[in-house]
Every structure is written in structure tokens, then in C-alpha cells.
Amino acid sequence: MNAPIVPCPKSFKATGGEVEIAAGSEIGFAGGSGARAAAGLFAEYLQEAGFSPAPQVSEGTARLTLVQTGDPKPDAEGFLPEAYEIEVSAASGIVAKAESAAGLARAVQTLRQLSAVREGGKLALPECRIEDAPAFRWRGLMLDVSRHFFSADDVCRFIELLAQHRMNVFHWHLTDDQGWRVEIKRYPKLAEVGSVRERTISGHHCTWPHVWDDTPHCGFYTQSDIRRVVEFAARRHVAIVPEIDMPGHMEAAIAAYPELGTGVFADVKVRDRWGISQNVLSLDDKCVEFCKGVWEELFDLFPGRFFHIGGDEAPTKAWEESADCQRLMALRGLDEPRKMQSWFTSEMQKFFAAHGRRLIGWDEILEGGVEPSAAVMHWRSHHQNLDIAAAAKAGHKIVRAPTSHTYLDYYQAEPVSEEPLAIGGLLTLPGVWQFDPLAGIPQEAQGAVMGGQAQLWTEYIATRDHLDYMAYPRACAIAESLWCGGAAARKFAEFRVRLAAHLPRLAAQGVKYCRRGV
Ligand code: ACM
Image 1: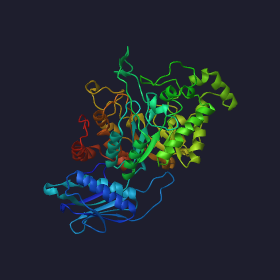
Image 2: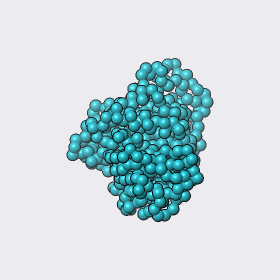
Image 3: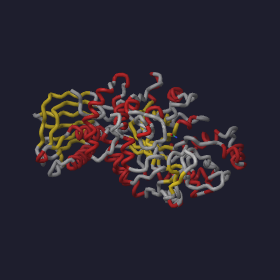
Image 4: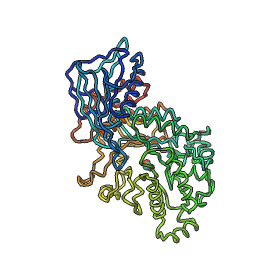
């Protein structure tokens, strides 16, 4: 029998029977503090689904019990083991066990998918035994909140949905040329000035002449918003990886504090069009201090191990044309402009390490050289000369995020003329589902691959409904690749059967997923 679950568990054995739990039954927990927290979260989910009255949570064994059997320490990258087991039987009721709190959090999501609330508020689950563990440690979704801002509530909902698919990383792209979205108390103009875009290009940015929407686009998260989102994610054992993209993609910050720029380009403002800006940070000493000041506040806000420095698409033209930057290069012994970025990334890496944090960046950080302790997010699957296998062999930890399989801002169904406007490309559900994080990595270096993630860049995604539409069901397929691994052994037809059982769960939560090509 198919497990009616997405992503598919490693082992699912069902008898064909069913176990009912009476309305009002309590949820028991035993073991570590993670068990109490997981039981509390499950109780909330059940209540939302109509299991009433709301289940009480109490220590000890009940018809529904969650047990944490150990208290393992996180590994060198900050991940806990996530294996779990579930037994649903008439004799013992429902028992979920995991060594770690993270494993129990995944078990809760599986239980949630298995649960049906019946008339009278009773709970029914298929009689079964599940043994499960993920293939990859890093299973993520990235959300760009710069191009279009999404409220803290929308972000929590985004995290809730990814957690339901047993994903565990939320990569929060917080800043870009088109808007700075996080309050930094030391530099208040970042939010005051950098979060306000006066106008926005309408239609596709490659269409001429440009047409403008003159409605200002604004929004940023206060530090208290950020704390609320961090707490929401922590309850679900989802790590947040905040990204401040630097030294390129910084025009909004330079608009707020012009002294951060090189002065080569006049009329710096929060960018009102898409595409790559030439306006990069000057990287002089004051600018580097400024960046450290931003990161220090983020280190206080985010408890996770990895912090994302961006590093993609930083043109060197401004460093070439600025006399001050040329002097700086000579002073630092840098013989070509590209090395400005690698010098800066290394400085940041030392700074992160001194704060006990790990740096991750888009794969451009490899250009000009960077220490192997920097983790690399591999996105340019189209780049001929980028040797990600060599980076893995050199000791970099790798997250696969290739345009070829994980860019959910691409069109998803043909004819694309019938789809809402997107950035371009075509990435169908079966295409996403074929994502293999180990592709092209020789066996001896595969241990370097932590996992992968899908990206939701939002140049053309302005609303929550549209975000749902672009994310789902393709994010289900990403979750499946990352949880199950073994791309060659998986069968799309089998996935499709489980997906058909799963999509009504999303619909019941108001997720406006794409129905074309499912
Ligand atoms: C990227 O898509 N610029 C990482």
C-alpha cells in the first residue's frame, strides 16, 4: 500500500485496519523536553482540524503518546538527527518515538497527514508501522521578501507549510537592491529609507518601453517581528538562514547610506526595476565595519548556525572605475578587481567564525578563492566553468539550489502564455521532482552535500495567493527529492498517487496551489 504521505517515508507497513481515538482524548509525552513541545504542537494541529474538545497534553502514556528517547547534540553543521518511528495499532494506540526533538517534530507532521477527524470530533488513523529518516540534512525553501514584501504572518504561514513537508530550513532573503526589509537599530535609515521603493516596473523587465506602477512599495520587519518568526520556526524545528546579500545587490542600503557606495554612479535610489545593479559596496574600512555592525544585530536575533552573505552577481565595474577603490586594492595587495569580493568574503568569514557562526554564500564566493569552511550554495547549473565537484572535494559544504531544478519563479506549465507573468524558464512538476542533490558529485565527495533547496524569487510574485501558486505543488516535489534521495529509484507515477491524496490537505488550508500539470 502507498503511504498517503508527502514526502514518502522510508518504510510504511499498513494492515488495512484503522485506529480510532475518542474525542477529547489526551496526548501523552515522555522523555526530553522536546516531547512536551511536540505534543503541544500536535494538540494545536488537531484542534485546528476539528478534534474537539482540544486535547490536553500530559506527562505519561496515553492512547496517543510521543516519546523522546535521547538528547543528542547537534552535529558540526548544527543539525540534529531526524529519524523517527510511528506505531499505530488497536492494542497500543498511537506511539511516535524519536531520539531527538527534531525527529519528533517530523513525526508530528507525519501523524498530522495520517490523521482524519471524523464526525463527532473522533480521530482516525490507518493501522501502520512507519520507520523514517531523511536522505539529506538541509531541506529548504528560500523566500525573497525584498522584491515584494510579505508580512511576518505570511512568512510564518510559509514556514508552517514547508515544515508540513518535513523540510527544515527557511532561507530568508531579507535584502536586495529593491528593498531592505529588516530593522537594524544601529543604522535606522536602512529600514526607514531602504525599505521604500517609490515605483516599480510593470510587466516584464525585458519589455520596452518600460511601464511604471507609481504606487510605492514598502515594508520591513521590526526586530520584534523577527523574534516572533524565529520562535514560530523553532517550535517546528525549522532553522532560519537569514541572507543579507553583499557586496552586490546592495542598492537599497546605499540609497539609505550613500557613503557605503563607490560614488561612481549618480542618482542612487531603491531600485525600481529588476536585473543586476552596478551599484556595489565600496568595501572600504568604514563600509566593512558597517557590514559587521549589521551582522552583529542579526547574530543576536537568529539562533541558527548558518548566515548567508549572498555574494551573487556583484559586478566589478565600480571598483575598476573608482580611484579610491583602486588605491584600496593596491593597499590590500589585490591585483584584480574580482579579488575585492574574495578579500571581503574572507574578512566576513573570520568575523562570523569569531561569533561561532558559519558563512554560506551563492557559488560566486568561490571566484577568487575562499576558505573551505565557507559553505557554498550552488545555483548556477548553467555555468560551464563552475566546478562544484572540485569545491566539494576541497572541503566546502554544499547546498544544491540549481536553476535547472529548483527555481520556482520559473513558469511551471505550458503554454506559458496561459500562466501568470513569470521571470522566464520552464520548470514543470516532473522536472522539479527529478532534482538530485548528488548529481555530478563523485562518490568520494558526496558527504560534502548537505542537501538542497528551492527558490522563490519574487520579482513577479506580489501576493500570497500567487506565492502559493508558484510554490505548490512543486515544493512537494522538492521535499520528496530531499527527504527520499535516491533519484534513480523513485517513480513519478507513484509520487503522483500520493500527491493526489495530499493536495486536498493543502486546499483545506486555503493554499492556492497550481492545478495545471498535476
Ligand atoms: C541568484 O539567483 N542570483 C542567486
